Amino acid sequence: MILSLFAVLICGAVLLAGFACGCALEKAFSFDSRNSAVRFVVNTSLGLFAVSLFYFLFSACGMLKAPGIYVMLAATLAGAVSGAKFALDMLSSSFVKASSGGGKKDGKKPGANKLHMRIFAVITVSAFLCFVNALCPSVSDDWDSLAYHLAVPGLFLEHGGFYFIDSISHSNFPMFQEMLYLPAVFLGVPAGGKLLSFVFALFTVMTVCFTVSRFYSRDGAPVASLAVVSMPIFLWLATTAYIDVATGLYAALAVYFMFAYCDSGNARQLAAAGICLGIEASLKLTGLQFMLLFSLWLCADGLIAKKKFPLKEAGAMLLPAVLICAPWYIKSLIYTGNPVFPFFYGIFGGKGWNEELANVYAFKQSLFGIGHTLQGFVLTPVRMATNPELFYDQPGLYVGPVILLIFPCLCLLIQVRDRKLAGLGGVILLQYIIWFGLTHQSRYLLPMFVCSAVFIASILYSVKNIPAVRGILITVMAVSACLGIMQSGTMAFRMDRFNTAAGIMEQDEYITKYFPPYRADKYANSLKSGIKIALLGDTRGFYLKKPYVWADTSHNTAFNKEYDTPEELAENLLANGCTHAMVSFGTPGIGKRASAQGNNLRIFEAVDKGYLVRVFPDSPMDTTNVYLFKIAYPAK
Image 1: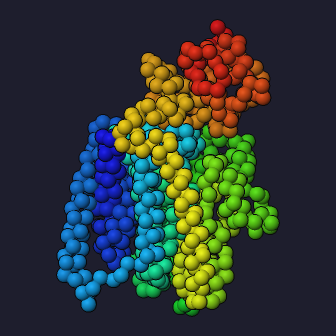
Image 2: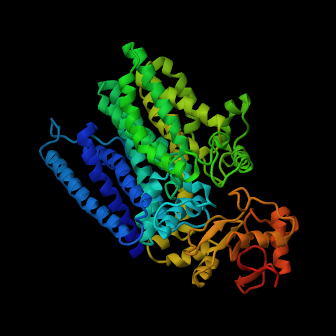
Image 3: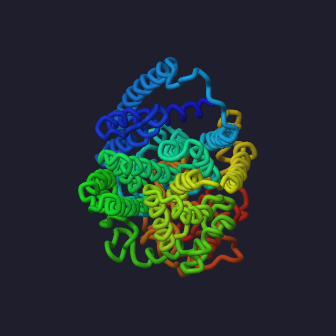
């Protein structure tokens, strides 16, 4: 329980620091927030870029060790105190306004909408379960969090700042959100970082709600929120340290400000949209596409509505976007020679990478989906809704009905004839086309799904004479949301997550039970300094406190070799400074002895011939567990 409270406090401090920065930005950019909830979501979301950039500067200057790290934490705490003061002032102002009548004219409270109350109940239950799951440490189902989202900030902290991590290409991705994990990881409470994904999920639900409410229909606003919650994949991502939920949030905020600009013509709204686009590109390399998509939207809107090319307006939007995301691409250029490493190797090259690795990476990404054909283009939405395992390697994570509703609603634009929705519809369609031309992982489409929630709800409540159809679609969304609730509830109660979050089960016991490498990690951490561990069959090194490398093929040039003999395997591991090897026999990466081939077979042979000497555990090997070996050459 204490650790859970500590995680909440750490996450809250980072958010309040972001809110304080956002309040300063609000004065400069006139975000035009209409109420307290909107102000808090918008100001915090946009202000967090300043907090992330602040941490970036400390990392770039090598100041993540004492005393620099303590200065960083003290500044965060000071920002949190300032943010808390702003929040209290905002709440008191809202209370005074509510007490004085707040716009009621007849003294009567409006009747509660039963549909809205039911939707609110579904969202509340979903939020509670996601909160419980997010409070728990990452285990086996949270692969990428342990491989790099949490692990890379941990490595930066151990090193004292940025450096080239030659075995982890992912460490050169933009890491806006991962920078915000630094306080939680440093203080040993990574759940404080994971909670940011949960908060971003709440902000996403609120953003689509107040966007539809402000620009289209108050009745449609809760339906937009339900559309987001109806995606089980969204609910799962909200409990991890993955950054996909945040990509949906900032895409939705960019839509909000574009809508505001279309109505007001105020270029400051474009600057705010530009901040969102810059953060989007600071989260993920695929976020760069949104600068192009929103620029096309802006140009088309200007040419159609005002009969002129909006050059100044485009500059007002793109300048802050480029300035905000540029540090990450400059960092990658400095450390690897490639601003978008490891992609476009044929154009930019890249340190610790080669054409073979680039081709392998592209091949692995191409395994998702049903093919880049015209038939695949048409059938992918249906197959994504019915066969989610084809589009993501985590089973059971359905996209939900949103993907099936997008395209019929695009057809209804002819009847609605709304300028803003036409622009948003174009962005959605173009993002799908770009995604289809690249990799077919469903979570990469989360920004499109979130924007589609705004689009679908706005269309459904703009078209007249379809109440029956609207009711059916809302019911389908509610059923899908209940499926997500069932999945979240299973994780919360059957996987001991509620007990862990509540402090009934110790976190160490929970991790040991649900993360097979953890016992070997703890043993390795107890060894004397001077060791370096080669991870084979598993890349999840977050819980290791000793130097380690990803030593499987296809990750880096140092280990991207086909070994003809177990001697070659041992020689190469030792040549790259490795003293130990942690082998995860139970993962698909290694497989079983009977079916092992190539390098996997060399691992089994190295154990048989004494090049890998088992030091943990002492129990007989069953090749379904995780073992720590000392590398010996010549063989013992």
